[in-house]
Amino acid sequence: MNLLKKLSNLSNVEKLAVVTFFQNLYLYSHVGALYQQSRGLSLLQINSIWSIIVATIFLAEVPTGVIADKIGRKKSVVIALFLQFLGEFFYIFANNYFSFVLIAILAGIGYSFLSGANEALVYDSLPKNDRENLMKKAMGLIGGSYQLAFFIAPLLGGLIISELVTNKFLLGIGLTATSVFIAFLISLTLKEPEDEYKHKEESPLTILKNGIYQITRNRKVQWIAAIAILTTAFPNTLLNLYQPYFVKFGLNTSLPIGIALSLGGLTAFFIQKNIYLIEKKLGRYGLFATTIFPGLFYLLFAIATNILYLFPIFIFTYAFAEAKNPLISSYQNEQIDSKNRATTISLINMLIQFYVAIMGLVLGWIANYSIPATFSTIGIIVILATILLRVDKITVHLKNDS
Image 1 (cartoon, rainbow, N blue to C red):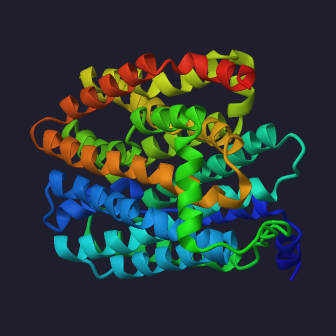
Image 2: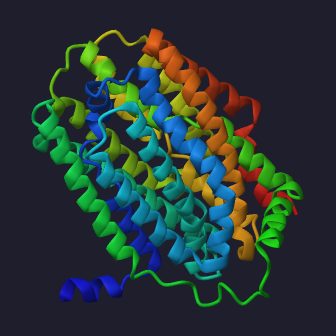
């Protein structure tokens, strides 16, 4: 009862941080690719699973974003978590590529419900004064919770999946489904912001048009969206490929593979939790640094020839892969009107997902021939995009432009 009372007294941001932790406590994430390989999937097929997820997100982003603006952010988050739970439950019984594809489609629909609604719920739950800085802190806290889950899950998972055998894999998947169900239950206690729907009732088509208008009329939003898309560091590709890559270098047990991911998650947790302080310290180079670092680490990861080097390089590559996201989220939300926030964010996410889906297939195809070549490709793309898009100028422009 005391726990329930404490939970009810938490703010939406704090509740979403707890939800984020439990929904991402994937006890089999550090061996997921190895499990799929045990079911007969190639590296191209494994990487295509994520491409199918993001392709589904691409198709569902706008409809679910519109639904979020119509039915409310809370309900959209609840629906997303329920679909995620169903996907994890069905994952227990998946034993061929086709079944993994069907689960990927279900997961994609769930992700799309969450993407725009989650950020919109956070932003509109914050006090109106100083929302820009509060959003950075809020998204840093939620991003930190995500990374904290990725710190704990591989350690627990390494103990639970003590051998790379089917029954151990399935135990880890079942416990993960239970954790996602807990996140779903907590999401039921979220509160819709009181002033969220004081605007006049609009048709879904009008909401969609307004979302497109928000993007096309605002060059700052276009610039931020271009950076968010083209500097994507493909963390899921990294997660898929580091597992067989480590096995190739002699790590044939679950625990050290899990420890690497765990330390990466812990490092990412501290980076994202304090990202607003990092930006404050570095000024105009804050976003630039967090954007270009993943590319540099990918190149180092590709040329490393010893597990003693691979281990720490992977940790920092993973830690910085999504470090820029809280900053991008803050700049993005600052430029978008509240009433169509979920739709507009969903439209931007749709473009990101399209890019990730296409590139995921390309990277998976390259990985079938050479995993280091895949890492090099990602590194070069991220570095070039960071430089050509003048990421170092964005904070100055956003503060000074009228």
